[in-house]
Length: 68
Image (cartoon, rainbow, N blue to C red):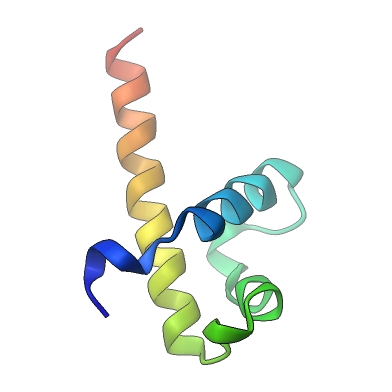
């Protein structure tokens, strides 16, 4: 799977909402991803998506802070 296709918009949306809900620390979100998306049932696949989201989230945060 190409790195750019790992983080589908539906995954990003779910992870953004999960973070905002405060239900879990995002470093422990792998089981939530696996439960929500059956195609990410393997720990490796779910973690790849989570890591891609974390990297993108970090970039968004940095960009927001430089625009202030």
